[in-house]
Image 1: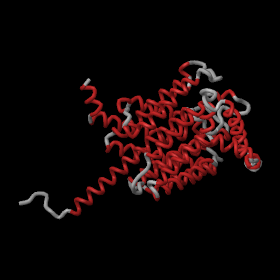
Image 2 (image 1 turned 60 degrees about the vertical axis):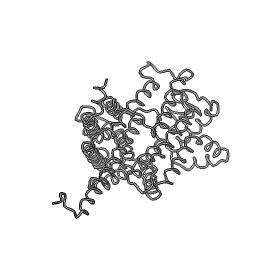
Image 3 (image 1 turned 135 degrees about the horizontal axis):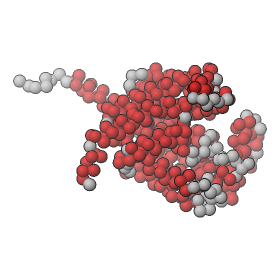
Length: 416
């Protein structure tokens, strides 16, 4: 037992965690282009390979408890959910339990990784995201010609419109991860790559008809700047906003409907946004029927044609399926996350983490289902890379301070 403990606590395991993170970083960019769905496999593998790194520190406990409550309540809600999975292994309850453990282990691996190898991992991640940005710019100009050529080369041709839709997913990936990647670029002396990533995000959003990433970019940039300018107050305000989103969204939408504002706004938006607003309105009605315990995990799949698969809003989906307990657990998690970004002085690492969190929340509010495997994996990857960028920033600052201290000294190392 002592031998195993020393093995997983020693430098060998630290190097192992570092190289596993290098492996994950090398695949992040390519998967963002050709297959974001594979992020679930990638993060699960990283967590499995670094499982001994899993630990819950004192500062982690509120978030860990929120995840535990959410997973247990989601599993229990299957007893009254109208949705029945085809097999136990395909149940989202089982998947959530596995994802919680494995993704947490992947996050903890950053803490345990050898600093030098972690630096290499973040460099690989930075170049991979830069490559993804460059490819997206080309795809935006050519109508996803590279992706179509790739599919043609593997004898799996695809229609141009479907190719554009698939490549557009990479823009969402870039939007969530650009904050940590940009910080890595700045810390490693390649700030030009941060500009390239932003350009890829804008070009992809415009050229591939993905308007949500532009909203995310604006919101994330503003939030990141606010956290850098007001490092203690801004995270608290953002945490309160995230909590309000998960707790009060159904009530806010209901009030807007009662005042007639909701219908007037829906008449003025595009068809895609109008359809989302239809889903949200139906969700509010069904939430009001079972606000305490919800309809059960994955129940939103059964509310067609009013809702197609899910309400396209994380807060509404959690309320609809898991009720007030699920909404409270989600609130605790996100408030804790922003609390962990509080600083006493300006910190680029906190700003980068904020950018990733705000981008993820933006898409969660208007696009993806809460339990989509690749989407949860992307969120975990954002946490992993933000933690890696933060450690990189700390190491860089420490190195500069040490170098400055050595230069300031005028005393010889050995006195004669």
